[in-house]
Length: 96
Image (tube, helix red, strand yellow):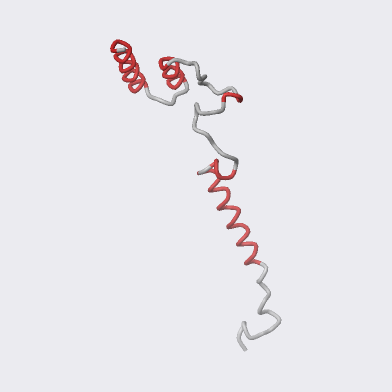
């Protein structure tokens, strides 16, 4: 008689399958949370786009230069990009 033909031992390890499935689901949830925090922790907004009621860093009355300075100070743009945009703003001010 084989091991699977004995009715007493046939379902002895059945409880492992739900435990494996629960562990797998938990692992997937933690992996997804690390990759996409907005999916399981509320909506995420890009930096600088917070509502003004929460004290966002950019006010509606800020000038373009002030906004550019804040983006650079927050580390959202590199120094090269900052200098390039600053030159473009200066050129646009001369034209206007």
